[in-house]
Amino acid sequence: DAVRVERVFDGHGRTSDGHRVELLANVADPEAAQAAVAANAEGVGLFRTEFCFLGRDTEPSVAEQVAAYRGVLAAFGGKKVVVRTLDAGADKPLPFVTADDEPNPALGVRGLRTAVRHPEVLDRQLQAIAEAAAAESADVSVMAPMVATVPETVAFVDACERLGLSRAGVMVEVPAAALRSRSIFARATFGSIGTNDLTQYAMAADRMLGDLAPLSTSWQPAVLELVRATCDGAAAHGRPVGVCGEAAADAVLAPVLVGLGVRSLSMTPRALADVAAVLARVSFVRCRELAHLALEQPTADAARTAVRGALAEVL
Ligand code: PEP
Ligand code: MG
Image: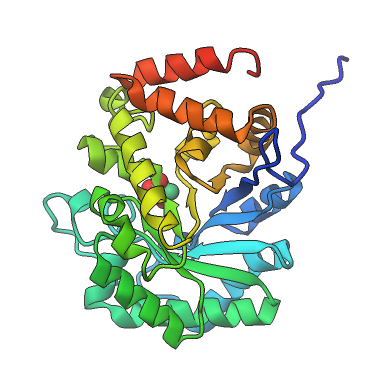
């Protein structure tokens, strides 16, 4: 039998000239945490907490949540873990927080918006995250999904601080947040771009519709512009921005994202080795050139083709 040699990630993402790019894992339950550890992820850039809530008629108690979160945090020791608060609504309905009669759930009360009517659910989740982090001596940050405005950002960061969570950030997945990045990062301590939703909302193309796949790609120059705007606004306050949508797992797009100013990429663990290998073969200056090259193109296809061609020698 032939021995298949798998590429391995050494646990330290960087460009060829040593510019650091943290390579993190997306994790949705304790089993995925094991896969992330096995793949040498530097930590978790997106811990989706919905597993603890979905398929239930009532909210899990704080104690149940603490136990569930500890199960994931325990796997990472002192490594960084970014916990995302509940992202209910749209494709993830939950009887105790979302309405089932919205005509257009993707544009409805979802993500952080559910906290307007149910602030106590968010507070109990933040309390559980804080308790789990303390019990595991974990390096925890928290972020909210579907943030669109500065007041939402301020309310979330305030709620986190009240519960002793000092590293509070926002997901940038609504174009309004990308465009108002400078004001948002006056308060949020970091950002994580959810390219799945950011692309859906920028292109007005349902992310679940296969027919719209040519529109629904983060290679769209309009989406790349929003990534750049997010990074520029955050940089004005010295705040780091990462990407945690599917785009982070695209090894050809990764150097473009880094060139646009992204400092960490969080992805499915099996993509880590390929993304790390490409980044290790391009310099940071080259990443910036590739970002300009992509932004100059008229279409998503042209952007992908141009960058792929420019990277031919390292792919
Ligand atoms: C995203 O929108 O890119 C994201 C990471 O969040 P989710 O896929 O869970 O909506
Ligand atoms: Mg999302």
